[in-house]
Image (cartoon, rainbow, N blue to C red; front, side, top):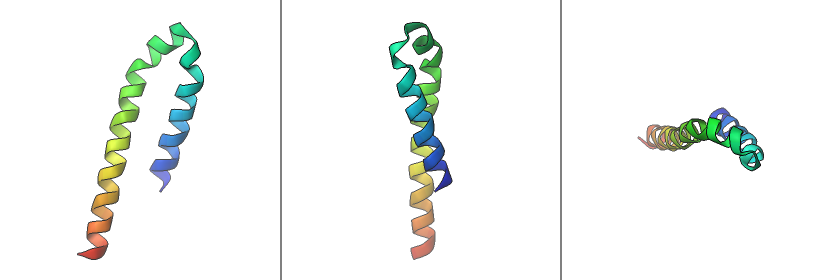
Length: 54
């Protein structure tokens, strides 16, 4: 799924920035967005599977 790929790339970029304290503070809200995106991705997968089996 395309969203999963984007989410994984975003997580990798955020992980790279972990060492820099200033950047880390700036990116804190982005980490919340990433958590939210993961939840949305899971819901979409559930709905897709339900649609296929329904």
